[in-house]
Image 1: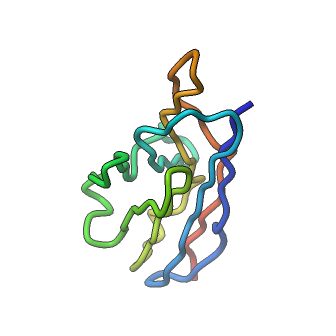
Image 2 (image 1 turned 120 degrees about the vertical axis):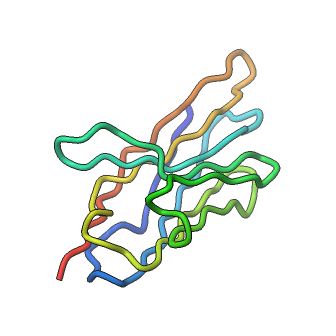
Length: 118
């Protein structure tokens, strides 16, 4: 059983910062790309940032220069969010492409709420 567990969401004022963490656990052979998506009420889920297992990252245009994605080992990914804006308010989901041996598929975390408001 593979699990992705996120943490680090919360309420922050505009211009503030938050750091999201995501850790994968379970019967994992290897993890390829990991990333963060978000979904605001009434909107579709969208990619925020992703990083390959070689450390190559890509970002949505709306967060370039403000957010940074990183991995410190094979099973954890982080999202440093700076200069937060009200429009960054959403539920943020961790996503990973995981090889469990028999299959390779994408897994999702349960989501963590980020609210940017004064």
